[in-house]
Picture 1 (cartoon, rainbow, N blue to C red):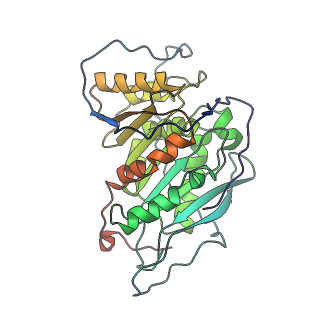
Picture 2 (cartoon, rainbow, N blue to C red):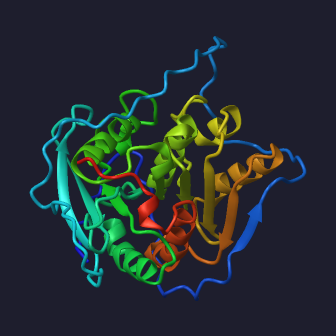
Length: 330
């Protein structure tokens, strides 16, 4: 596991509560797949609308950019040897015009990456606003993925863990925000330099804390680009987010189609109220989603304890049989 330094950023910093003692082991999660009886749900205050109807935005076309692959990326080669190795985490970066300069990420490559010549589903995971691209690695995502793949519980997959940086902390959504970096730069870079499956059916997106906000913001605005989205302890606290980008409103205003949605929060999480309101609002509107209320707080112990559950849920949509995936044309 590669450890990453944690960098504090100034704006929209979310105070992550530190436990004085390790929390009790998580109780079995409470699972709700809606719908529920309509109730009055109060959303967080938002800027007043101008009253002018907003035209539907064009869906971004995610195309593979002609970006040179990182030297750390293994080159796929066909091999008949049975896979017995572990996966690995490599560091990479790409030049971002949106953020300005190089933008770092970490990439989990599954065991025997590239040996069978087929593409892999890709899971994009964002961290919180006081974390860097190493956070999910610290939480044990690679070990959990190795174990689940070896046990045949999920298909081999890529896990992309990008840095957030000032763009994730200081923007709220829409064009020119962290959304643009993810859709127009990160995903095209990954799909141009790896055997990532370049289709909405082969992508999932999720995050913790501020990263959970961004996963929901992006997927609720462009649901056709992803099979699944997860908001894990999502910090839905952005008071600058207008109704066109705020997940608490776009979840209800937009047609999410076949997008799978997972929401979870700790019962002692200090940012839990708006996530609970989002769940209740979606339930009242009859919008299918999976809801988990667990013991725990807004901290590493909570997230690391649920990493295997997250992976199992994301992996449910992807078949185990590798022969059914398209060939990699990298």
